[in-house]
Amino acid sequence: MGAMVWFRRDLRVRDNPALREALAEGRRVVPTFCLDDRLLRGRHASGPRTQFLLESLAELDAALRERGGRLFMRWGRPERELVSLAREAGCERVHFAYDVSPFARRRGELVARALERAGVEPVAHEGVNAVDVRAIETKEGRPYAVFSPFHRNWLGVERRPLLRAPRAVPVPDGLDPGRLPELGDLGLRHEVAEPAPGGERAARARLDAFLGDDVADYADNHDALGADRTSRLSPYLHLGCVSPRQIEERLGPGAGPQAFRRQLCWRDFHHHVLFHNPGNARSEYQRRYRGMRWSRSGWAFDAWAEGRTGYPLVDAGMRQLRREGWMHNRARMVVGSFLTKHLGIDWRRGERHFMRLLLDGDEANNNGNWQWIASVGTDPAPYHRRIYNPKLQMERFDPDGRYVRRYVPELASVPDEHLREPWLMPPEVQAEASCVIGRDYPEPIVDHREAREEAIARYREAAGR
Ligand SMILES: Cc1cc2nc3c(=O)[nH]c(=O)nc-3n(C[C@H](O)[C@H](O)[C@H](O)COP(=O)(O)OP(=O)(O)OC[C@H]3O[C@@H](n4cnc5c(N)ncnc54)[C@H](O)[C@@H]3O)c2cc1C
Image (cartoon, rainbow, N blue to C red; front, top):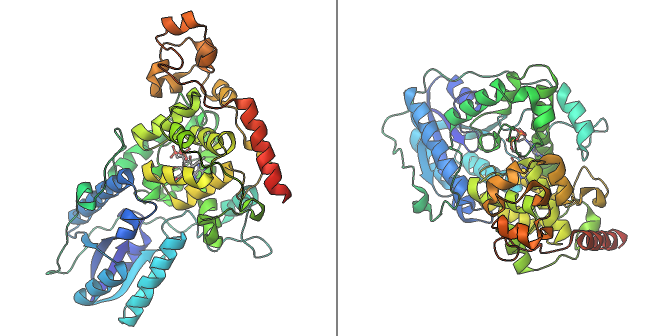
């Protein structure tokens, strides 16, 4: 008899409450991961993120082997696969980390019911967030919809203790270990040329590098696009190759570390919001914007997705996404504002495109941020405050054009004074910079001022209904 650990997005041996509790039962454990076609092929299917997942699973398996165990792989419906493996291994309990998305919760409930019918006890633990985001509430006992008061409360919540990696992970003999497939076996393509590597080791290396160097100046530098000084820990946090508690524990006092910790709180905030508002996964949190008039334009969406809008900062962001499966937060805000406000295209189309390519694609964070930038979600501000002017954003956050030139090579030789609005370059300068507008780089697909006015009219109309 023993216990099973059902890994989902807590792919690490360090600071893993589910693994620790299973081992605390004192017998053999069955560390298991179940690939699920609904996630691999469903509306959030992603080649790049699945590759990152497979690399993280390979490393988890290696870390368990170093401790005498291994990872048992299954492929199918977890409510069937886990029950059958638990029966075969004689498990009395299945330990796992709670998760907040509507799909994860439904799946967790189905699994829990199937286990209970088979006489196996399901046990949910923390592990994905810094605090238990299900439990945090206002003084009136209600969920939060505004970030700042959530943050104040969150800072004061007592943290669970950090857990060390286990020394040994004894597993039963004679069970079929299953097989870790390759991306192609799953019918997925990689699509991204320069992705970060998955796994717990890469996560630790990233964290060490960030804490050793960039965190001290994070408060000043996190928006600087050219410097690229944020942690890039988001894919590792998404799949739990590192836990927010492991990160928090290593943050000292000071403006940089505390500004960084605040970003971890944004993550918990969006998880909290989705937990309490599962309907957000499909529709606007703010009722008045449901049924808003959105453009159905195919060509404008394609120009946005391929980084051909003629606005250098927007195009740089979208091309970074295609190249790395990741985009700087400031650029995500600019491209999100551009799609929903300048092009008037439904935020759900942007959300889906991001989910396809982002290594860190995370339903709670992605949905929450898309709703935020489209001005239809929680933490509201007047919609005109979140219509970003790409030229001014570049002036502030990429003043020397380093970011734009890195991702839009056709603009590499455009002089600084024309980089923000290359369509205003005189013809002889275009020729000299080998960047003829309309041939080497597109004309802007919309006019900023007109697009802004139309966006305001659209939002005003929706809000006035
Ligand atoms: C339109 C849009 C879509 C987004 N989609 C996602 C997504 O799918 N997955 C995702 O993890 N983040 C998403 N973000 C939030 C943010 O852009 C990324 O978390 C951040 O850029 C990741 O880079 P980093 O790890 O270097 O961040 P850092 O600046 O180093 O921050 C550290 C960590 O804090 C968390 N964090 C930071 N900012 C936010 C935020 N605004 N919301 C929630 N968590 C945050 C992340 O876990 C991040 O890894 C989105 C933002 C926008 C505007």
